Length: 248
Image (cartoon, rainbow, N blue to C red):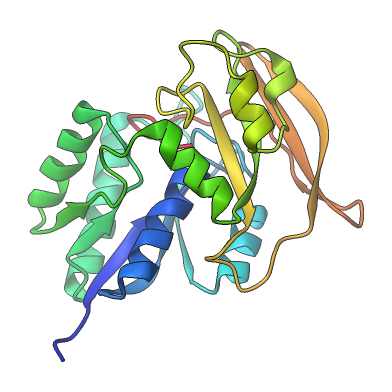
């Protein structure tokens, strides 16, 4: 039997990342070396999602995979520049390539420009991108997510596309029925982001609950809490720095 290909997963903690991981595990063709995420150093939160680093670490532990955190520095503008991001990511990818990892997994679904960007950058260091849920119908994809037993909350919403009342809601059949016309069911256009806390990729569920919803500019963030009352995630400000839109 040939050796399995080594892969690392670009990880946001949301449902699309989780579905990509699920598809890889189901195929049995790959050795998943870990999850790679980016955290804004100044805020200690995941880029574009605003989820605190400690919650991502707890999630990775519950899944049973190592989490590799790439820390994005803060510049004069308060965020990592595009050039700084590309330099850091290039060095990180070179490190993986030296370790025999030639594939990077992404949970993108239909954004062609983002796919082309990822493929071009990886090609420069002799690597390739893998998109396990590419071109899947987003309505069927999220229905499958629910049917498979995944559990997730909406961690933040774009207030220009969804009202604040959607922040903190569970991703379930009722939510799908309530989404306004024009909103992608997977939030692929940046309408919302999510955080997964249980499902078939988990060895054990995370015990969390939703706290208050805080609005900043046009974004509405749900605060995630442990069931013991200890604050484990405060979603108050969306860090920037990484180009493109990290999947929901």
